[in-house]
Length: 470
Ligand SMILES: *Cc1c(COP(=O)(O)O)cnc(C)c1O
Image (cartoon, rainbow, N blue to C red; front, side, top):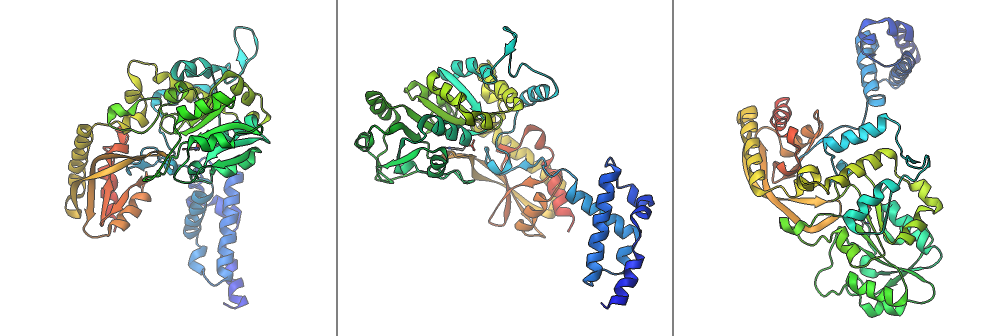
């Protein structure tokens, strides 16, 4: 476009004030302040001018209606909340990308109460002076895990970093080569070790590490023996792993503390529900490990946190380390964590009270019934737009717990007639609320396991809407 026609078009662009006065535009403003809204209008006009210069916009784009649409789009992109509630139909319970553990209403209300009020977060009500935020968790953690002392920080990565920094800075930490893992999201044991200032002393081989390997590595520079839960993988075949009690014995004999990064941190014995392989926190503590760290939002089913439980003197070293302040948990987390831990002491119990545990232990009968309900609901909502069926599938615990432990259960398979399953998946993902599903063999799969109670009834409408607007 030549310069004069660009200039001619530019003259069609209304001013910020005229746009502000326009009814179509001002109706979009809602509760946004004039200052914010003006900034968005200016950005919309700037965008339009750019497009005109590049020959990508014409006179029709300068109308009030077109500009109102542009302002609305920018408002959406820049100022509307981006963190949205989604429906997790993947069957992966502790889905790290989808926020891990959803909390119960009861726990959420405790968080809300702590958020809206002052509290005795760091105030000792008996003595009338400064208190310790971690003291609130002390008794409950001792009760539930048998550990002498406990501390909570921002997440488990922080707990491991804090433990290594306070217990092993400048000294050696012995770890089996089979446990030098990467969890994803850049948590790698060797790198965390380096950050902490501790020196990694690798022993054994990838598949086999023997007690004698640990023994041979111990010398005057040894600060700690560390065992790491392999979380998201397993070494199978010709393997030898040194069990926790063997490590504890080796450490005790030589006066070296042992630490376990347990990862998930389960407090319930899941073998009763047919899931084996996940050692509970209390089992680890009972074996005599000096420090154990785990996440608050994986199998514990609480808010994001990293929990350290163990020997009082070691926990005290961590609590008073300068990093502890930088990594500390906030009061909302404390409220949620306390409320979550309390559920483990009640008659109703975690299976009923903690959504994550409830979903993992959901019975085959309940899942089957929910799948049937879904099929009926979807059938009447979409009629002949899709073929429906129930197929056997496997959900997962996720979050690096029970990596091989699968959660078998029925899945509803939706095979759309007019669009591909991939297209349906995309529409569901971009829906309101977004629904996250798996696609397999040109079917969209819906696993009832991870649908929260009030979501079961909403799924049929979401699918109908996604299939409807071709
Ligand atoms: C998940 C996990 C971590 C990281 O925990 P976050 O709470 O995500 O920081 C560390 N170690 C192990 C073994 C894990 O499974």
